[in-house]
Image 1 (cartoon, helix red, strand yellow):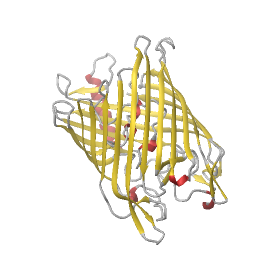
Image 2 (cartoon, helix red, strand yellow):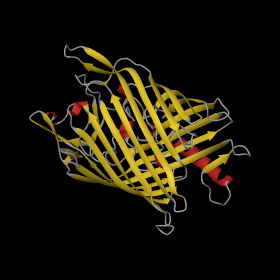
Image 3 (tube, helix red, strand yellow):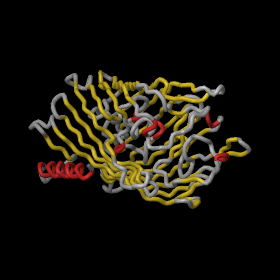
Image 4 (cartoon, helix red, strand yellow):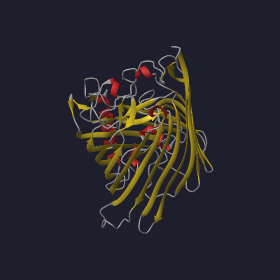
Length: 449
């Protein structure tokens, strides 16, 4: 199957390249009609990470304790194939892998990593973008723009993955089998989604035992409904695919306010004090604003900013840790010295999903284009995540990032250096306490065409 896909991709790329002139093109695009309104396009992305990380307490790497780690990995490797086949018909595929480093767990075979992220068909009902109906495996979601991010255009090293609330639990890396309607009517940009979530039993991980803390239910099945509504004060955002741009690098004047949410009946379950099983609904809500616009077009300066408030309800005391491309694979902490039932706490993991509230914000400034004498452009940024989950008994989960992008050729070729500071927690006399804060330093090189 993989060999076949490789042959198809290579043949498509060769055809596109042969069809182009000698002049450099902005994209690998093959026009189906003379006007270029019908086309098929390919994109390729690779994000290579080199990272130093201060380990969480109890971290093991291949069975040995490690206070710090250094790893090399592929955060994302992707291929997109999509096109406007007729005036009404649009098709989109994405294939690739994520979080591939020496500790990547595929059971026992490091070659089992790539999969289809997206495969959808979309029909344009209106002449413009007022109404599009689509279906298939898709990232079209409610809640937030970062629940459906265009990862090739993000401003920061990474997206706030916590806003992809069911990632790899009842979805496939935030994608679900869904039907959706999306469009732009005047200043309103909307999407309505009906999803058919995957059962938690198929996520490839050990299933948690039923306890007094809520977790995804292992019996029963209900559809998930989602909605996302944006009011666009200035220019409209791009509407080609369901993905949402991270930063336009001063090419557009964007200011939006948005609300979003998702709901699934009886998505969670827990054991009551009477030893009965109680089902609980999953309900999430967010309100956010996004600003991305040029400041001085002659100098090439621009600003990008985001602020969002997210209320997540997974049921009673739900909490789940996650470590992005975790550099470790084990812990020597006993069950008495960890927060039971919330996932691995080793490596670089933090409480990322839980019943509670989160405020996430980011700010970036695109420096003058002549600063480096024609050798690209710099964009420093900062991000902050302020989360408070019920399960942590009043302790905050605050994570901070500061970094800088060096855009060698826009998003096509960029280098990012990021410093992250995150919390850890300890158990003392059955009490949960804040532990030492840890840092990680990551260098990324992205190529995206």
